[in-house]
Amino acid sequence: MKKKSLHQFHTDWNKVILYIKNNFYIKEKIDIIGIIYLIGVQELGKGKNGFLNREDKINILHIAICRILEPFGYYSYLGKDKEGWPHYILKSKIPFFNRNEQLFLIKKAIIRYMNEENIIE
Image (cartoon, rainbow, N blue to C red; front, side, top):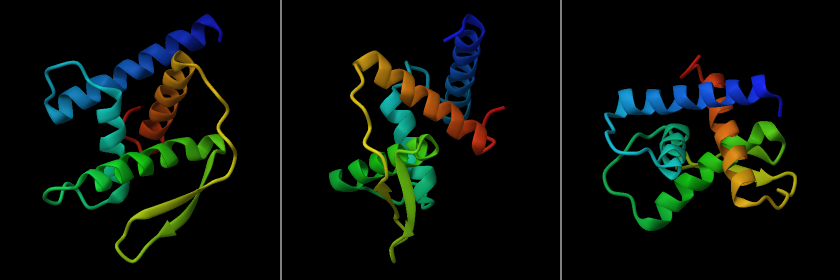
């Protein structure tokens, strides 16, 4: 990745963090799983309705991962079920990435999502 692109990536990631801090009033360090969870709740479109069980929380994370990786060609959106839960199908096998590569891909996907949804500019 070119220096300018890497610089832009860090600038954009900082915008994501700033948005989360300012809009969710988080003082401590922001966890990437928390950001993914927020995206999943956003995609579910039901807000935080009461208490969710462990399975629902895992499904919300799965929804977010599918949604943010969809533009990269890994998943395809199928639609919502009768309860309003979005469903995706694996379209292309995700290659093996080491931890740093995984983190970079997820952050890049989150930045793209936030831009596409006009959450950050």
